[in-house]
Image (cartoon, rainbow, N blue to C red; front, side, top):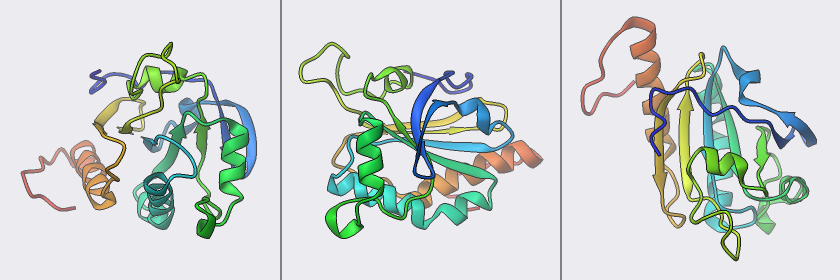
Length: 180
């Protein structure tokens, strides 16, 4: 599903934000900031946990670029609350401060094309790893998908964000191998 250059799908979802369940979470609330929205398969799994923590460790790098990080999986809000209150030594995400969207009905995942099968499948599908960079006006400028066993390289994500910002701020093109 190609979302490049198109408005990010409008969502109204449940998310866990600062430890609280928020029932009317939307991406529109983050207009005037870049949004790095990443999808991951499940809470309490090794690769997913490593990514969730990696984004937290690099959160300052995103913040100084005027970007927010938002995670999404097909887990329930209750599962996210449990995940966020469980220590990393027990495969939890304690210490993670950015929002996690709970998508058990798979609506958000379907809109962004990240599901690994049809919504009606049994067992219900989970997300492949998808990542989207949405600009301040709500347009998708970057999207990527890859298989569940492969975690993301955050230096590459930051490079894409830097390239988008550079192009939007001063119109400069970014050649192959360019580093921000």
